[in-house]
Image (cartoon, each protein chain N blue to C red):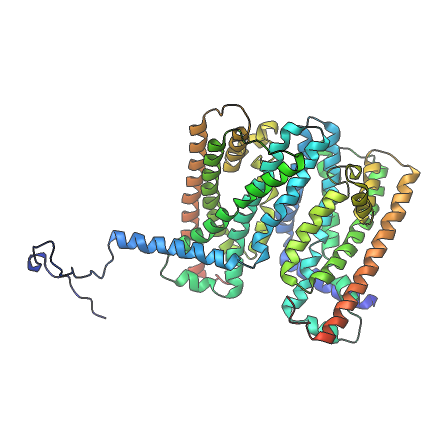
Length: 292
Length: 261
């Protein structure tokens, strides 16, 4: 195929209102490239939503969220600690968000591998990383429904709305948490490409991170040797900030804490891009993509 | 029939070996299970109540084995996915012994994880056992897990008709079990009729015995709980056998064996 060379600028009409169109360069410009990449993300996002329709497994964390809320709320009500109900409402929502992200990270790879389409996705010109992020973002966004489910269930159980004292702070914390969650799900997905069975890791990474992320019990209440590594997990910052936003007390260092969650998310993004690049190079070299 | 169960158990063992290596079982699965037990136990720290810590710890340490045997719902439907279900139904033997052996892999794995939680993690968290009573707790745990396996199989026979709901059903079922059987809160907090439902679940009675043994209590009421444990377990086993038989017969009649869901 021959590519047409662009016409020299001096031959073009000088009238800016001239209807003569500029010849199209075979090399896409930056704007066109960004549009194409955005299209990949949006298409992946929509594809994921379509695939999730009618698949109960994808929705599992959201289906179990009300029940888990009952488990936690009844523990605190039985102990006569009504003031901790906000903890019991927040925990299942955070767990749903983490679980859906983890599930999407694992299931995306597993299902594409089982379907025989993983090779095609990786060989396609669209960057695999973007496809992955678009699809994970769809799942993470959907997992926000867990917050509403947990709040409604908790409110019904205590017979009054569970207070969220600082809704704007709460919303900002949720937003940065979703972003960080999407980035870290990308890290997990990159690792799952190499694993024989992503589902083993998918099953294994739930409760250890619920403890380290302090989703129910703040990490400050755990021994110092648990608390220190916990501070490297963005979930611990998110859980603390979300809990503080629900309490009727001013939130300290809001911007610093939002910035920390964002920074940890960006570290996840960098790590996932690095790992994905290395992983794809490796499986392309070894030819063990389907049978990792 | 026993030979059928044993033959199916060989498939179960092979499945377990495919799913886990000793390394991934120990550091992946066992690590996750211990984290689950810690997650619930530390709620006692939040409540500043040492008794709550012990209650939640023992409840979860036993519950994790139930979570594992409830994976039978998924592994039962694997036969459908593998396309072997029509052959199993066409075979001259009854269907239920196949499925009773088919998911046995979860029992030793569940009992092992639960034992590690109860007797290794427990002392680290300050929850101790009298050695003799700990030895007694192991067979009680085994009977509890086997009884809950029977319950899981009964549910699996139903889920065989809609395999895509296997994971959702398993998760909903084990959380309901957690709520009803006194795992996180004592059953008497529920209305009477809910407590009655809980009495039909073997875990309620098994957990009562194990809690008693952990507290160095050996009363006659534990004997009653043991009878109820075995009795409810047998009822669920009978229910599971009947449900598998009905599934096979209904599938033959309407030709839905390979085309459900």
